[in-house]
Length: 152
Image (cartoon, rainbow, N blue to C red):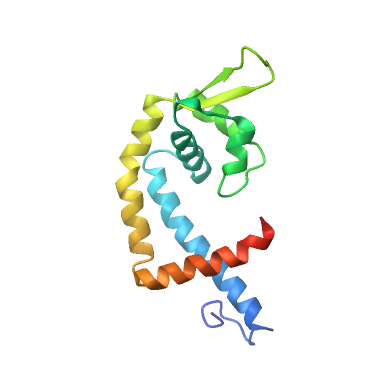
């Protein structure tokens, strides 16, 4: 990692090096996914919202529920949903019993957009992690979960 970043001296600790390596790797992998999503004119957060809503099924989710499920938190989920709604990929519906509650659902066009990306995204992820065996990927998942657990 020191050579990759062209550092003139070693990292102060293995923890620092591991952290920076994790962040750098995440950015490299994320950039590849973002490039693929751009082929469908989507950003990573927009893609995440569409996947969340597909998973919610016909019942949809309130805006707050979408925000709570985001992989990476975004400050303005309402605006993000508004952009997707403007493009016909999601729609919002105000509750008849509680006018404060707005439920968001994915449209057929949103489902089609995701369906076009399902195989390419899966293939990309498989390729990104292809240097690791299935067992190593499981170990990586376990280690990452252990790092996240006290922070969630």
